[in-house]
Image 1 (cartoon, rainbow, N blue to C red):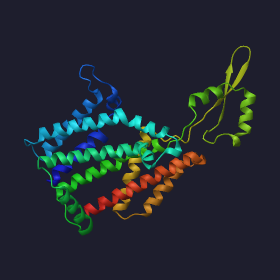
Image 2: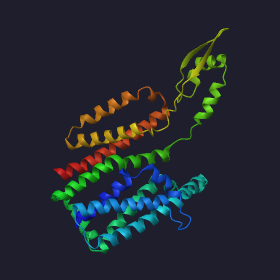
Image 3: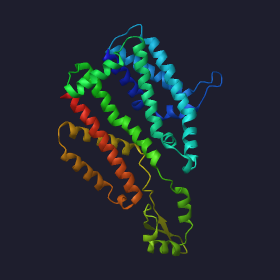
Image 4: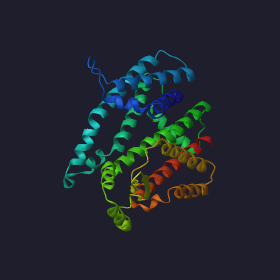
Length: 330
């Protein structure tokens, strides 16, 4: 009965973190006029149900409970996600706009995207458990708590299939799931920066003398910008001209590119692997190697802060999940 719950959770995490596309996410605010249903949310729920149906039937088998449970879970999932899409941003902006003196602890919590993300996931997990419990297809909450305590403190054995499912779940949380979490954390702590288009326009309008003056006083310039002189010679029949090009980079913007995302996945997998095999010196080696690749950017204080926060979060997630994996396989 625990195995079935794990299969439903695995299906949820795959559909929410691994196979959900940006296209689906962007369509959640698009509605069909006739039914007033969200296009993206409807696709998202069907996507969840298809993945769950395939995984449960293949690894557990089909039963009469499956279709009604999927319909109930899908309906609640749609409602929760609709409420999040419609009200989450409004609530966050409302809390942020409050006067600092009038804010309480709940305002500071409710203005965080990370909090909304975590609550949303917890509600989905709770929904799956309640529906399966309604059909008497999973153990009671009391037994689950007791079983987890036995695993943690008394090293109670886990069946082979459940162990494999748990390892896959932890891998997804270690990579894709934690990637979402870290993105929301950075969104909460992100500082406002000057628009790059405005910076580019201002630099392009500078004369050669002004740019030379800027270059000579680079120490007084915002260190979030990397300034380089590149001369371009344009020749024609009458004369030749020179122009200066300014290259700049916003160092305090967190990386959103695909390569950076997958580097983060690999980093956390390596951290977890080092924990599982007790190779803790590898953590220091990994941190040193990562620092070398960002050495120039670390001159920016704001980037260094983001870098440190991201590294520490990855370390914590990798160590915690690595510890859970080690506990399961040993």
